[in-house]
Length: 193
Image (cartoon, rainbow, N blue to C red; front, side, top):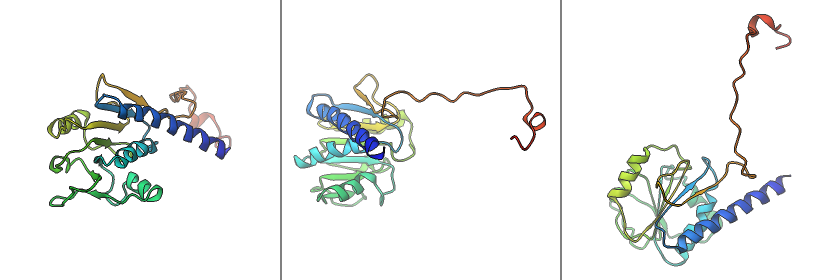
């Protein structure tokens, strides 16, 4: 059963990675990926690798702990790629292909990037949708593609890819509240409860 479930999850990752790579090769500049929290960030892995293999610079914005960024851990385990760094003021990052930073430092980052990934799926969001749009507006790079990975859509009326919570894509049913006139403390004995 575990192998079956793993196979379904790998198939989901392949399908969504293919959709994202189509966006990468297209003319659209913005993409929303809506996914459950702590979800399939593996979808981003292939996209980032495709840019790195072409020698194009990637900026990865996240609020994860600097020492435990999930994407960096995946790169360490899955590839030989080591040309990455976490942004600190005063550092030299001209030759780095993958630069990670948080929202507080993004306005200090300089340089041209071909892909800017904003990943809010792995950490609790600190900023509202409007604040993130303002940050993007203030640090806008004309030739970059922007990929937003979170629980909600950031770029309204633009392309979005929705990764389902369940493998079969059936929505989760909402919990129902059952009301009763029975006072559970008085009408049902402790042993039955």
